[in-house]
Image (cartoon, rainbow, N blue to C red):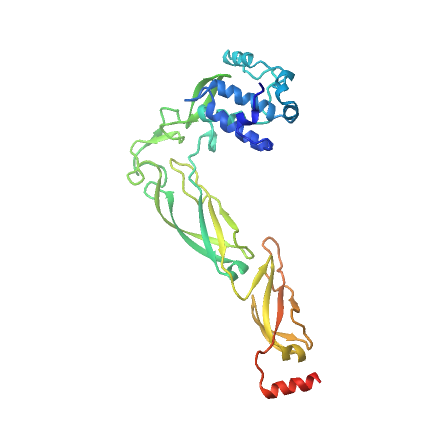
Length: 367
């Protein structure tokens, strides 16, 4: 009976190529035979499924022929898995001269966890203990978002230790080369896997990648080089930002322990509404109520704009809903010079009650 490769990978029949790759990567991590709790048979099965579903031509044949696909040599064009395993374990490399397609997947993603891979590199290939990123919300008034503003935020975060200045040693004491890694910050080891032997480098467990150690650790940070405290950060908000805009501030997140770099700070902007203005991109709309008399005979009216109150001439015979365009009075463009426009939308008010004289005058006018 034909295997259900979609069920093996845990994906739907309409799954995209990226979804299939992600499912394979996750299961390969989980069932790799060289990991604790791994399952070689299961690993073989998911690889077999990926060889078919990860290849557009093979997947099409599998979907078309179903139970007869196995007899057509659908998996790997006749590749013998046991030969592959034997070759791999004998140190022959496993992948040479074999029809085995991982569809561009980086096998380091799969094998990295048990070979010491991953992480951001530092100088000379050392492993950096980068601090975590921080995300905060910052509330802005409507006009602060329009014209830009400088704000200060206070965070309780990891910062470089002020007592040892981040070098992890008690002031006045020696810092020596790490004996474990010889000052390299990394140690090399050989890992035997089912596809052969691999040499990998990992962060030194004694100096945490620094290549040096303090004879006497700093008493304030306990030799980590960082402490937690409040820090006030100035945030420059550019003109023209919108609600939901995120500002990235490099290296203003948590400082990394053991000499590692700092993470980043992400500031998400929350812009308050202003009942006077309605923003659409870089244009702004203002609703202005006038009397039916002003609309009929014309008038000079005061209008709120982003730059303050201005006087606007309303010509006689103005109809309800008329828009008056004020060029360059809108929101500044975020990445270029100039501003959008401001539109004044006229709403004509009709009185609900009239005096006898007013009614008589209107009746005479109507005649």
